[in-house]
Picture 1: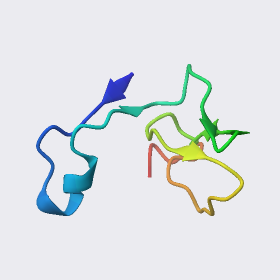
Picture 2: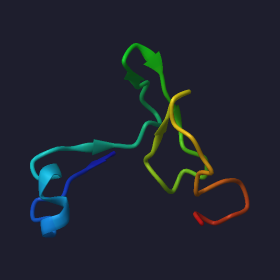
Picture 3: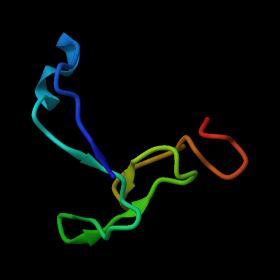
Picture 4: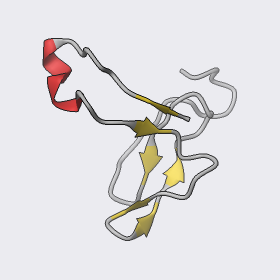
Length: 64
């Protein structure tokens, strides 16, 4: 699944025209490192060893 923001608010204008993808069921790589999906299947975050948590969406959190 992919989504985009064709008319973002001014603070997010830099993401206009880009597509975002849920990592599952894909495989994603960031600078050659295989990323893992953010827990909870609600968020589309891609986690790598360089990203620090805590992360939203862990088991039992219903996305929060």
